[in-house]
Length: 84
Image (cartoon, rainbow, N blue to C red):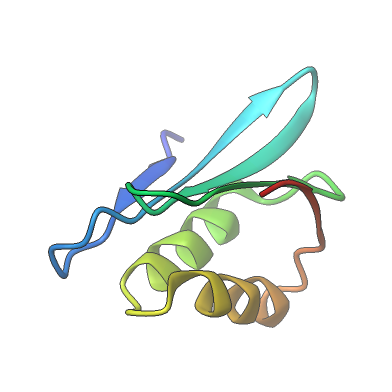
């Protein structure tokens, strides 16, 4: 049922995390609001609820990208970097 797909940092930063589906593949997008934009392709078809939980936990951290890697690893969600 309707999972949240975009998240903004609660600590006042401009950090953004979200996921989208393009051409049948799921992608994760990170933007720091200033200079960095990164996109990863999810290697397998993820459970959207688990992916949403991982992104929510990561964006709440002060170091979003390292936290994102940790949260995805905990949930055995494999990714491949596309840009950034």
